[in-house]
Length: 191
Ligand SMILES: [Zn+2]
Image 1 (cartoon, helix red, strand yellow):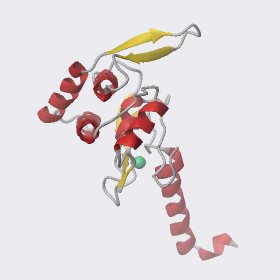
Image 2 (tube, rainbow, N blue to C red; image 1 turned 90 degrees about the horizontal axis):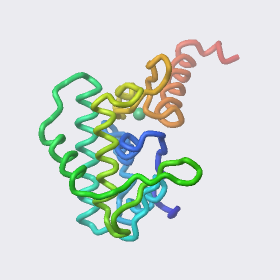
Image 3 (cartoon, rainbow, N blue to C red; image 1 turned 60 degrees about the horizontal axis):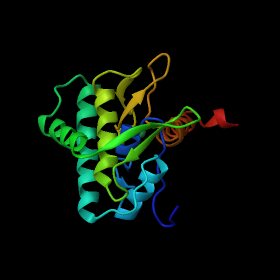
């Protein structure tokens, strides 16, 4: 990992982990892939290693990211999917080439058509997005309850009542805010 850059938020769902590379969209936004190298790092962490990335490829990745965010948000609130976002997701899905590979350990890995092809990696992310929005996977799209975040996330909890995109960040912050508010209301309860 490179020093001096914001950490990645890691999740188990590729598409929403990717949209999580921009956090606090409704507060002080934090860009977690500010340079092409940080996109390379993020892709490597997520099993989509590429050797190089140009500024134009980073721009394309961010365009896909914001399109996923727009489409997933619409899906979460059962709104019509924005046509421009659907177009970008479909373009990214069709422009890249990646093959699913079964490892001897029985795991799925992605093999990209070339080590320099960010577009291949983006096609995998786009396909992951499509499977979630199309309702092919067990879970439900929802929006983070933190007012400064409102990120779309994929709730795979049994009860489908998860409130935050990420327990360690948004979830904890909300809990702390509630605790502090209670302390102010009932200062004696701390004694
Ligand atoms: Zn959140």
